[in-house]
Image 1: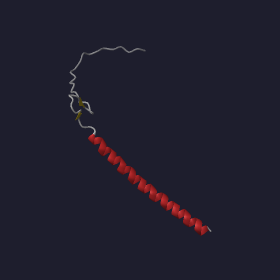
Image 2: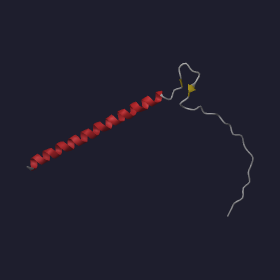
Image 3: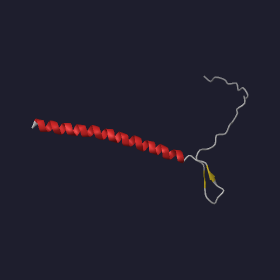
Image 4: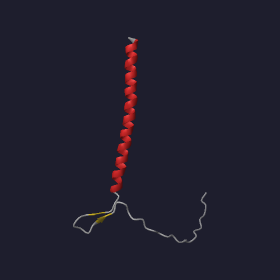
Length: 77
């Protein structure tokens, strides 16, 4: 009786470990394919038969900040 319970326990443990390994691999592959699909959506696209252009990533504007005026401040206690 103990022998049968031990064998059942070992089989359940092995199935648990193997399924965890395969699930981890499946999640990693799904994550990589999702990242690959998101790379293609960041491109600039145009609507057909229209002058409308859609930018998924806004352009960065170069704003050179020249030095400003010195502002004196007082500590409030």
